[in-house]
Structure formats: C-alpha cells, structure tokens
Amino acid sequence: MSREFEQKVTERMLRYAAVDTQSSRISEETPTTAKQYDLARMLRQELIAIGISDVYLDEEHCVVYGKIPPSAQALAGKEHALGFITHMDTAPDASGTDVKARVIKNYPGGDIVLNEEQQIVMEEALYPRLALYKGQDLIVTDGTTLLGADDKAGIASVMTAAEYLLAHPEIPHGLVSIAFTPDEEVGGLAKDLDLARFEAPVAYTIDGDYLGYYSDETFNASDALLSVRGTSVHTGTAKGIMVNAAQIAAEYIAMFPADETPQTTEGREGFFHLVAVEGDCENAHVWMIVRDHDAELFAKREDFIRDCAARLKETYGDERIDLEIRETYRNMKEVIDTVPHTVTLLEEAFRTVGIPDPVRLAFRGGTDGSALSHRGLPTVNISAGYENAHGRFEYVPVQSMAKNTQVLLALVAAYAKRN
Ligand SMILES: [Zn+2]
Image (cartoon, rainbow, N blue to C red):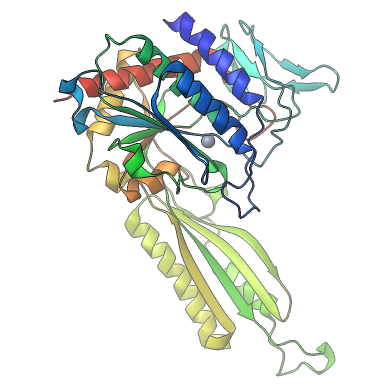
C-alpha cells in the first residue's frame, strides 16, 4: 500500500506544483487571484474522475467540494462523518510562477544543489532537518520559486486517500466530505466554505509542516490600529502650538513591554508585535497585533492596549487619539474541547500507522480551522509533511505524504468504528 501511495502522491504533487496559485495580500477580489481557479478546475475534474459524489465548484468563491457517501446504511449517522479541508493557494512570500519541482530519489544526505546554473544550494548545515530524511525521496524546487507543498502536499494526501477508499468499497466508512479552499495564506479563514454543503459535522485541515503533529489549539488574535492627529506648524514658531503625531506614536510604542514580542517568546507565551508604523507631525498610525493562547490573558492584553490609548487621550486630548481593535481569529480549543473524539480518534489513527507519539502542538498562529471551529465546524489541523514553507528551499518528503494518506484512512476507519 505504501509504495502505491508514494507513487500516487508524487505524481499528484508534481502536477499540482506546476499550477501557479499564489494568493495576494493586496487584492480585494474573491478569490484574491483568479489563477487559483486553474487548480480548482483541475481538482474538480480529478474528483469526478476518481468517482467522488456531489462534486461542485463554487464559481463565485472558488471552493471545490466533493463527498464519499457512507459505505453502508448503518454508517450513515453523523457520528461516523468527518471532513478534510486543504487550501489551494500558495504564499505571496515567494514566487509561485513556473515552479520546476523534481524528485531526489533516495536522498543520500548532505547539501542539495537545487540549481547548478545559478549555484543555489540547500545546505544541510542551515537546514539540519534534512538529515531526518536520509534514504527518503524528496521533492524540491529549482531554487528560484517556492514549491507549494504548503498545501498541495495536503491536497495530494487527501486525494490519494479518497481514491483508495473509492477503489475499495469493502472498507467500512461514514460520510467523508472534502473541500479545497482558496486564500488561506492571506487570512481567508475559509470564510466562503458553505457548511451546509460540506455537511460533515467535524473536519480536519491538513496543513502544517513536518509529519506527525497536530494542533487542536491556536492563538487568539486581534489587530490594533492607533491613529494620532497632530497639529503641524512651522518649527520656528511652534512653541506651545505644535502637537507632533509621530512623537506620540513613538511614546505609545515605548509603553509596550520589550520582552513580550515574537522574538522573545515561545511555546504558550503571548506577545504584542509592532507590524508597521508610519507618520509625520500631522498624522501617525501604529499597527500592532496581539496574540495569546489563553483567553483571559488575551483579554488582558487587549485591555492593556486600551489603557495605553486612554493614557495618551488624557495627555493629548480625546479628539487626537483613535484606537480600533479588531478580532482576527480565536483559539479553536474551546470548541474542540466540546468534541474530544476529534483528538482521541486522531491520536488512535496516528498510532495505527506507526506514529506512537504524535506531537500535540499549541500552534503559534491561526489556521482556517480557528475560524471554522467558531463558525460551528470543529476543525483540528494535521500536519501535511512539508518543510521550509513559504520560501525557495521548501521541500516535501514523498514518504511523509504517503504516511499522511495512511493517517487519513486510519482516521476514517476510527470514525467508522465509533459508537
Ligand atoms: Zn498552508
């Protein structure tokens, strides 16, 4: 089975990688780039070809759906149903145009020359995790683009698992729902996924790096925009009149604790992050983001920002300071905890395929599942197996994708046995 899967996921990964699906942070279109439809249409055709039911491409929002109906009437209950969700776009951080993926069979270890002509080398010293994959087959780029295994490796595993299930009608399973979504990399949060159409009551995104971990917990996240209105006058006659907005912005920034930043925290420690600041004497804007796993601490962090703004208002006047705090996403944990089988069955699935100690990771970010969980679809994230995502040194071990295919099948089996 694993040989067959290795061949299938390789063929799929290479085919998907060749389609440019880079999303955009600037665009206000849905999806942010029309080229994501190129892969959406390809996947729709492929779902039809392998025999999936109810294949549907939402032409307005670029979401692809498909279902594998329960294998028997006895398994038609909601308790046996689950869904898989993966994203089609690739990160704007590195080019996704003209990706030339290739397979290094039986990686011998050491540095990898990605591009002879341009002398682009992936050095083992810089990427020590390479050593873990000695003897495996690696899919790499030519060093000029990203690979897009984030998240096309996820798509390859889901598609291969679906194909296997359909080719083996004797395997008992409940409803398996599938969706491919756009714009994950630019904060799309799967907002256009139609939960009624998706039907399954719980889901898994397959989107994370190295094989063998999952996240049932993400950050709580908000952004905070402070706007300052100053009064600009000639510096020669400014005394008592000028109010320097840029200087007030600097004062605000200095109020934040220096040891609670992304660069000084890890694990379950939250932070404030200064994303951008712009300003002059007349106007200034400070964009912060705030993150914390713990809901109470998160609320305290938001209060801290409000306090900072209040202090500035006291000093400079209400009319000069504006603070806008917007929620980005919330920790999925409080939702996942109401359906603990999403985690226990996943752990069981990992063990079934020979991953005895899957890592449970409090993810220092958000996933589409953070938003989906709070919309009513509890969605745990399973890693997809890629490495060095969002850059030219991205790669994915074929064996990780094949193993993940087995994880998904074991998960479907675990749901089928549920009573
Ligand atoms: Zn991703």
